[in-house]
Length: 408
Length: 74
Image 1 (cartoon, each protein chain N blue to C red):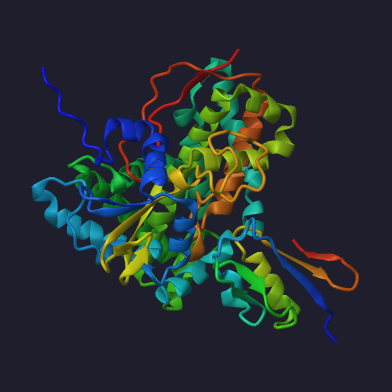
Image 2 (spheres, each protein chain N blue to C red):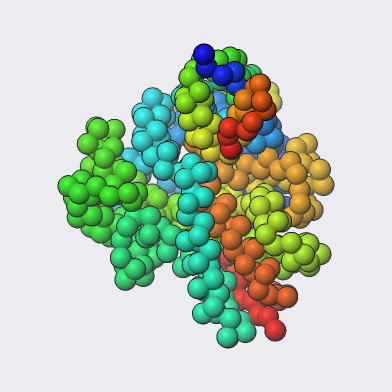
């Protein structure tokens, strides 16, 4: 039987999902500003270009959802057009989908909550949660890192930050899983996504009423007070609470799974971490972030015509920048394909750069540090229980679907 | 008389988020590479400088007493 030749422009091809480093690494070396006709978007892969692009927010708009006039890519089920419009309405109210000056006032309202020092206050909670989850897993001699550790940890932290009861964790995790369909390839993804969006709005609405009346020190109160100061509308408060849940969930999950996998696949580095878990956890987490980043790529829309590498990006063009490729750019990192837990400096772009630099970066770092430290303190060695690892078909996220490991 | 500050921005860490430039525009500006640099350590009251340093999401800014060398942030 004849098989169709794979389309080299298919960003959802199984081999691109399995190994984005080979595919985007090739582009980085041969055509760093590549027009992908299938997705109708520019693909930017070099470190220097990515940093330039992201820091020139006046040239490249983050209001992607609002501005993009092209149909969704990959295509969605035809009857889901109206759903897509509602998803657009929801997503365009997200802080990350705004440009200056609106973005600046919104970001300023929440930035103080997430500073490195403020987040340090969460370290004891994170450490205790990691210990508790590992205590539960330890007697079994094996675990799916995703199910036992990487998924429940961020949900625990975020529910605590939102000031909502423990028994709501499962419900919120379910909603977060639905929200993850945002950048997936499945044609029916709009229905699943909408379920998450509506569920989140229903869940958060009464909580926002509560916090607006009786403010507390949780994150919903921070947003509710910004509504009082007219920085956010009520819809924006709801949408951004959902954003926090979603953004902190998937990305942390990926950091933990991808980092653990890298440590297992590099026994020499695992030994270096084991020799000094507390001391090496910080640089090890940075290297995990660089080597196999939780977010592979992000998108912008050109706000005006821009020349780069002799090509013209037209106003309104989609541009997707690939952190996974930039982090392995030999022009920016020595021996970039080597996983080195003591790498320094390590100016990876896994949290982006510029005005949209990840709001939750400090929290993600603490979660990564506490997990990798605890694993190294607790286990002499971890081994993979399968070589058949699978990644979710997302253009944006580098998400393992399971990571079964065992120890003795 | 306010004490003199020494402010340093680590360009291995600065990602150009611009919080410092926003909060203390008399002290910080962006260079051509859109990384932060110090234009005037006395451009804002010490409290404002420390807030700008604390708001840096990558912890790229350190502040010390220029006379005694005492580290004031982080």
